[in-house]
Structure formats: C-alpha cells, structure tokens
Image 1 (tube, helix red, strand yellow):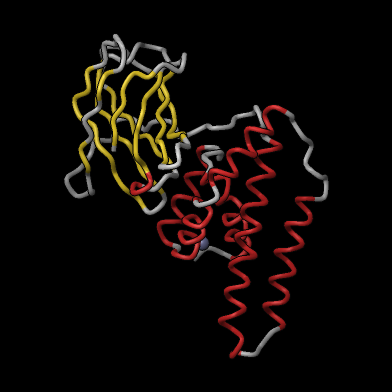
Image 2 (spheres, rainbow, N blue to C red):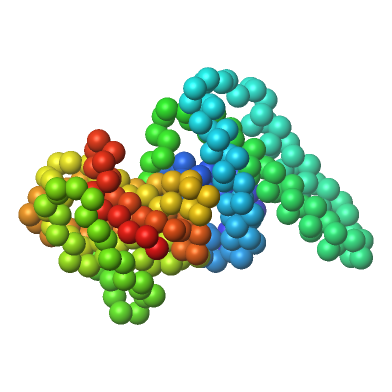
Length: 243
Ligand SMILES: [Zn+2]
C-alpha cells in the first residue's frame, strides 16, 4: 500500500498528469498508482472536466510568464497538513461521511492548485513532454486491443503494419508497429479530447527502414478521445485517425 506521504505527493501530481505535463518517470508512477487506487481515478475524472479552463490558463502563462507566489507551495502543504490534523482530531463517526466529502473536495483543490503552479513555473520548460516509446514490446492477445486504421496525411514513406489502442485505468495507449519513420527524426503522438484539447502521448525517434514498435501513452481516457495524430518535427501531421 502507498504510504500517506507518498500518496499526498501523488495526489498533488494528478492535475499535472491530466494536463500531460509530467516527466515520463513521474507519469509512470502516477499510472502505476491509478491502476490500484479508485479514489485517485475519481479525482482524475473530476480534474479532466476542468482541463479546458486549465489549458487556457496555461496558454496565458506562455504569453506573460508569471512568477508564482513564493508561499503557494507552502500554502498547499499547510492545507494538506491542516486537513490531516483535522482528520486525526475528529472522532464523531456520524459526521464521517460528510467529512470524507469535504476532504475529497479539498484534495481536488490541492491537485488543481499544484497543476496551476507547475503550469506557471514550468512555462517553456519541458511542457508537454510525454513518454518515450518502449522498444520491442508487441501486443499480446491477452490485453484489450482496439485496432486503429491510421491514415496517411503526407508523402511520408511510413508503412504501418499494425496499430491499435489499449485502454488503461490511467488513460489510453497507442501502439504502432511500422517502418519508414525517417531515421533520426522526432515524431510526436497526441490525442484530441471531445472539447478540442490536444493531449500529448509522447515522442519517438524514427529508425528508417527498420521495423519499430512504439507505445505512446496519454492521460486522456479512451472514452474521451476522439482523434489521434502523429506529427513530425515540424508539426506536420503524418498519420491520423478518428476514434
Ligand atoms: Zn490514490
């Protein structure tokens, strides 16, 4: 079981996770946790509903880089500590359910505040970084697999042998087996949400005629994804599909 300190840290990271702003090792830790924690999955679903407003705030931060209040991090930690202390002091079981609801809302506010803090402080530094592809990981018959017919959008020499989605508790994964991604060129995958937001799903480097397997992971849940695109280093769409 996750210890309370680690759990509090993971919950603060949920907002950034939903926005696709975590480094790959952090995102991996959140994914592993979401697989086993229904409470955090509920929070992710709630935060996902705020993604549009958060992303617009993010865009403003790019135009006018702002310095976060120096005591914001301390304020977040103080709120977490205060909630923990309050929890330990109260003993009335009849009020437990109401308290649980208030705690959950408080934790959600902390997660959103942390996401905003990261969005402001991290503007221009590593935003939108996703997960690097794992190599030589092929789809096995035991996992849920939704085939995707990727369409070409340019004159690329990419030959897709197999492509499909794997739904997870923490989001959705695009797996591609293909040849012809230009050697040394960086490609990026992203999923589009129903509200038009584009969520990063990581990047990979082409290896030319050699066959490659890409696992591209996004925080967007399968049911919320309406389109997937793979773009080249110049941002031109190479492959895409409606979902
Ligand atoms: Zn949790």
